[in-house]
Amino acid sequence: MMKIITIDIAGCFIDVIDPTIHRLSYLYPNAKFSRNSSTIEIEYLDNEKPTIVEETIRKDVHHQIYRAKIYQDTLPMRKWFYE
Image 1 (tube, rainbow, N blue to C red):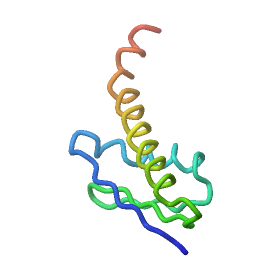
Image 2: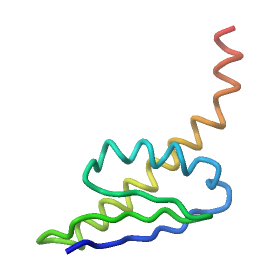
Image 3: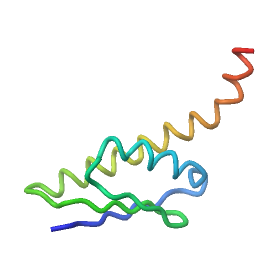
């Protein structure tokens, strides 16, 4: 059975949703990720322990979106440092 998780993304992270989905695609190759204006939807095959899977996916989404935001915000500083 397919299950869909919808995760709301805070306004300050909206500009990094696309890179986040790209990163998540390699972590969950069998899941389908889609973006709406301020949400990420994940469609995946439900298994024996859906609560554990959903918690893990939510944790990974938040972790990856935070990483993408840090990368974006520190890129100018890193470029300046290596010049």
